[in-house]
Image 1 (cartoon, rainbow, N blue to C red):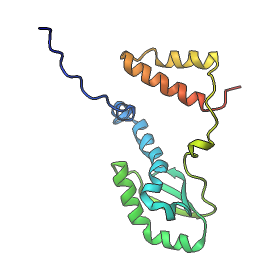
Image 2: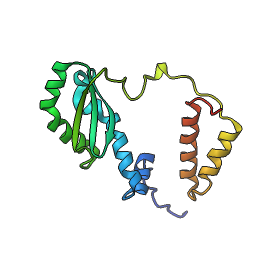
Image 3: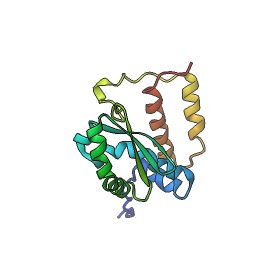
Image 4: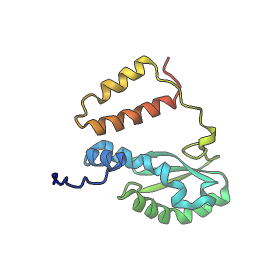
Length: 161
């Protein structure tokens, strides 16, 4: 009989790999801060998200634009609970305070898929950049994943002029 192969572990998500590689570095904190925008709707619910959205984050203070005075007053009472829920989803004490400011909230973090422009072909310079940025990754599978992610991201943006 042939040799029995050890069962391969399940593949890990790129997000998990990045989080592990950045653990303890300043970039880890920035990654968590960036997740605030992705977790906002889940944290506050659709009703509040329709009238209040994050617009900035600095030194532990999340700035949130609120569309009208009655909601601003209501959110003042809900701040502590929002902070606790956000930090629970972020896995640590990232948000220390919320500063509410009057103004129309910006649109959600990512537009719906049907409104995104179709991907484009990468320029030669962009293809070279992806190759040079990923060549130092020793694991071929991880190198391919990162390369595909970079390519997909570049293809969804306007070309550099």
